[in-house]
View 1 (cartoon, rainbow, N blue to C red):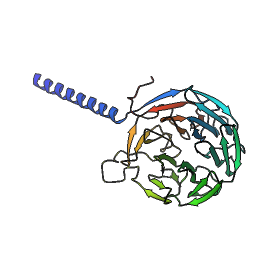
View 2: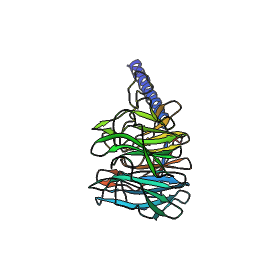
View 3: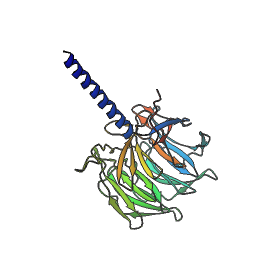
View 4: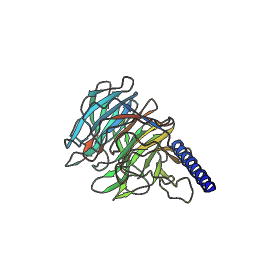
Length: 336
């Protein structure tokens, strides 16, 4: 009996050590810490738009789930003082599901949905005068749920939904106020996909196509006007690197920092908090600590001075106004 007890004790100790070791490995695999900042001063909302100019973030439009109304107010965030100031409203109608991007000096917004109509109007914001100027309509069909980005001195808008899922792409010349159709994004049509720019190169990935979550990732070559398909973002290959990939989603948000891109929140069968980091040099994704706010979709992500932020969003019958920053190399610190 004594010998049997000793053997059982050794087994239990070994199992405990293995469990602790596995837990430690998980902690190492899921680095990252989220820090809460001052709440957004405007009405809580989902599916807003955001752009940054001169280290300030601008957030506006969106849908107030609590009061079931669309919005067109705009706010600017000073990260140094951690406070928000209301600025001039976007012209035109209230909307959600719009697009935005910014040059070094101006912000641009357009498209979306006003509750009855899909939109294609387009506007330019000048932060020095706090004024909006109506520009030429978006070159494609009226739509919502498109993606947008700015690179190599041009703005780009594409994909989305106009009663059909779309994959067309358009280039905007900010100086000429001119839209030119470019090569369509590769793969499937989609809405509510995500995009980011790293080292001047733009990427579009995932989204929804007729109920299917897309697991593709494309890089755009603006010089040659072509799309390059990269590795899938799910467990697609026979290699081990993607065995645990669960990146696909729609209505997620992205930001970049320190030469890497991040995607978080969005819908993965339900509202998610999963966060992933993308390394363009290896074309690999690494899972990071889950977003520490409530799981949500329709949030906005932005970068100020190489620091990534996530704000607003919605979940079921609730809209959010919280704001978070992410430190991808810091150990997780529980907020309990």
